[in-house]
Length: 216
Image 1 (cartoon, one colour):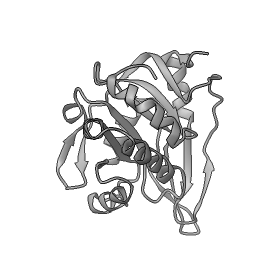
Image 2 (tube, rainbow, N blue to C red):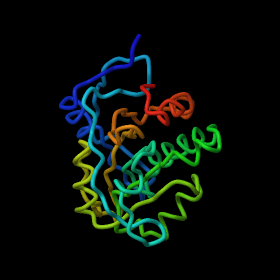
Image 3 (cartoon, helix red, strand yellow):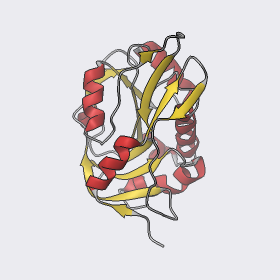
Image 4 (tube, rainbow, N blue to C red):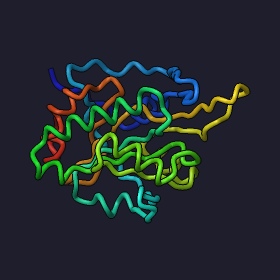
């Protein structure tokens, strides 16, 4: 059985819906929408028409400007849009990536770029974002900045996010993407998509190929 392959149009439609709305202050999360992906025996979906890398210039955890295109050029890169107050999906996703990264050789660990872009920049300051990511993996790159800029960058990958909203009970509900997108070091294009059900074992198996720009 081969990995599922979908057109970019179908992927955009699916990715725009594959979001999670989380009430970070209540400790609860609920699906924002559900999408039935094509059946596959593998965790990743290889895109027949890859995404261009977003032209995002945001602020890293050291408070300095960070260009996504320039600073990941020619490097295998994983991008995820989430936020630190997420009670479940975001920390699990980053933990799974951290476990998989540590299974790589030292050279491959140094080469791989894992980029976490916050969807809740009002609360995720460079300092708080850096502290949260350090607990996951100090090598992970955290980016924050103007929400409109982040929203526009996410949209180019078919990820539709909205600004965090405060509920009547005082809880804050935020929306984040439910997928990790892998960018090839050969083309700098996003060519493999992983859903939130992807496990650490799945990433551990696939990352050596992602690092080479091969199909997992």
